[in-house]
Structures are given as structure tokens and as C-alpha cells.
Length: 223
Image 1 (cartoon, rainbow, N blue to C red):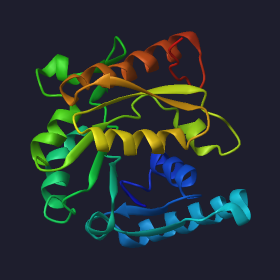
Image 2 (image 1 turned 60 degrees about the horizontal axis):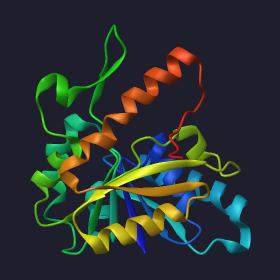
Image 3 (image 1 turned 180 degrees about the horizontal axis):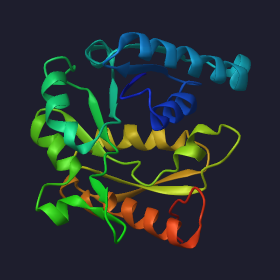
Image 4 (image 1 turned 90 degrees about the vertical axis):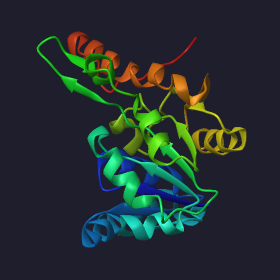
């Protein structure tokens, strides 16, 4: 399976590329082609050193639109403010059965701490905004509360849960299988895409609690 990462040169993109490349072909996207290729080469060396002969996938880098055309699954590692522009650019380049994953969390830091901006500004959740601009595609929301540092560290189990929201059953099964491939990460179905805001809002809560209680690389686990 080909997994594309839009904004794949960031920390989360690196983590997903390293975790999934043992079984899948990872396509690292960026607006800057050379930046994408350099990042992909660095990720590939790290993955090959870790997985050795057990690595069956590959990692390559290219421009975002080229990545979108080839992807079976496309993860949007972008800022909330860039959703509309990015989705408009991608919409004509995705295959009809492409699954789009939104881990996007709209938030900002204030004097009180991190806040979830859709509540503050009366806007739609990130997942609903993605769906509004990619109407004919299968959208799944997940990975909102994953520790970037733990995700990138292949020697560490995440020991966390991630909530999953979506309306397409087959897409949910596919994404859940990807989640299960990451050691220590468990998928928890939360409901349809319309309540994805409940998962997104956990990120600022998690960051606030971690900052004030000096908790490093926090995650969420339902017990």
C-alpha cells in the first residue's frame, strides 16, 4: 500500500514514515521537491538501519501533488489554516478510492494556555473542514494525541490510544489496521466524522496538563 504524507518533512511525518515503511511504500510530500527528497532519504537510512532485512517498504520524496496522485492513503500533516488551499489543490489529483486521514488540530496558545479555536472562533472542526473541501473522498480523523517524540523513536512503544472518527466502514478498517501496526498504539472508535471535534479538542487539553504538571511526551490511554 502507498501511504502519502502531505507535510511529510515535519516531525509527525518523520514518525509515520519510520513506523509504516517496514510494510508500506511511504511517499513524503512537500511544496519543495528537494526538501521532500532529502527528508525521505534521511528517513530511509534510519528505517533500513532499524528494520534491516525485515523492511519490505520504501520511502521516497516528491512534490505534494505528485504524492497525492500515487497515494492509496493520504495523511494531511498540515495546519488548520492551510486546509482550504491544500485540499483545493489536491482534490483533482486523488484517486476516487483514496482514504484521507486528518490528524489536524486547530488550536492556539493564549495567556491561559492552549485553546481549541473552533470553539473560540465559532468555526468547523478540522475534520469537517477537510470533508467540506474533499466531498467525494473517504475522510478519517485520527492521531490527534500522539507524542511526536515517541512516534519518531523506533525503540519505544507508544503505549497510547488514538480516537478514530469516520463514516466509511471500509476506510475505518484500513486506518485501524495501520494504527495496529504501530507498537503500543490502540485504535478507539469514537463515532462519525461529525463528532471528530471531541478527539481534536483533547490535544490542547493534553498539552496544558503536560506543561503544568511537567509531564514529558504525554499520551492518552483509556482504562
